[in-house]
Amino acid sequence: MKLFLREHILLITMQVIQFAIIFSVYWLDGYHDHRTGLYAVFLGLFILLCYLFYNYYSRYHFYKRLCSPLESLDDSFRRTEQTPISEALDQLLIDQYKLYQNKLKQLEHGQEQHLEFMDQWVHQMKTPLSVIELTAQNLDEPDSSNIREETDRMKTGLNTILYMARLRSVEQDFHIKPVLLSKIIHEVNGENKRFYIRNRVYPKLQLDKELTVETDEKWLFFMISQLINNAVKYSAGISDRILLKLSERDGQAVLEVSDNGVGIPETDKRRVFTPFYTGENGRDFRESTGMGLYLTKKAAEQLGHRIELNSQVGQGTSVKIIFSSTQNLTKV
Image 1: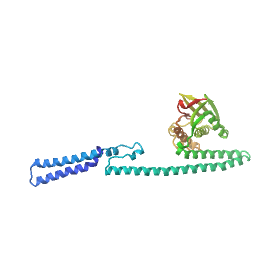
Image 2 (image 1 turned 120 degrees about the vertical axis):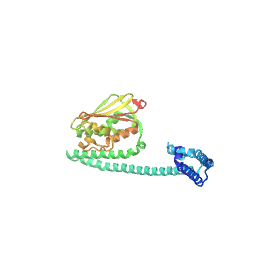
Image 3 (image 1 turned 60 degrees about the horizontal axis):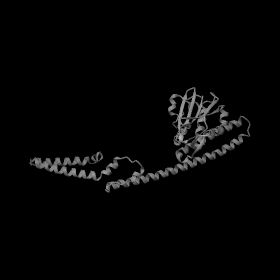
Image 4 (image 1 turned 135 degrees about the horizontal axis):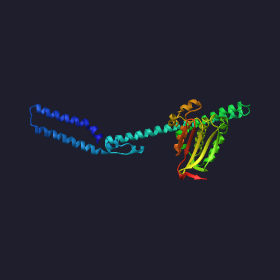
């Protein structure tokens, strides 16, 4: 009703002004019979109200549709009254929907091409890095270790870039299956063995229970690697241990990665999951990109997991991955 009145307020105003002018003309012409003039005005207003009443109820669904938000894109194909203005609106929405679908397909195609390019580029870069590593094995120390340390850093950066690209289409990249948490942790530790030795920080594994959860093994490997990378990086030179703990809490599997390193300042805790935010520690540790925790949390959310972070400056940091409910949790 409000939209209808707003649309016809000018018509109503002009009709009232027109009746007033006609009545004034008759009055100034010397015709002073109020009853006849008022009767003419009444007839005019009555006809106007009848027109507005008919116009409103004949287009009731049209105005209702204009005032109601679309609940889904399929609502664009919903038909209203068989009036010219309603049919024009229906056709406009259909054309808009088709245009949106075409643009969306173009963007998806461009994204697929971008992801394919990034995937190929990362794998192409890994090949010469592997060759460099093999060449470095024939060199004397400490040159060999220094070169392999740099190639490990480059591999970590390349993997981060690849997962950033895949995060845009993460739903299509998931492959959910039962994963034994202790097995994936051992694989991550094996992959990061040189990283531990280089930084003189070593993992301690604490298993309260052997637990299997429904998740994506590849993305979980990446998430744990990011947490371990941060734990080692921010505790190197302060502590020689990080703790990897598996436990069950309220029917949920919990994987915790904790360290005794520098900790996170209170002012940075709310923003550590923001992309490219490095905070105070990031300025002190130049290798920080600000993407590790962001990617970890985004992947966890897409998988239905939760991330909890606790940290105290000078005491260390603990990050927990809390997996889904009891129905997806299996004890081995």
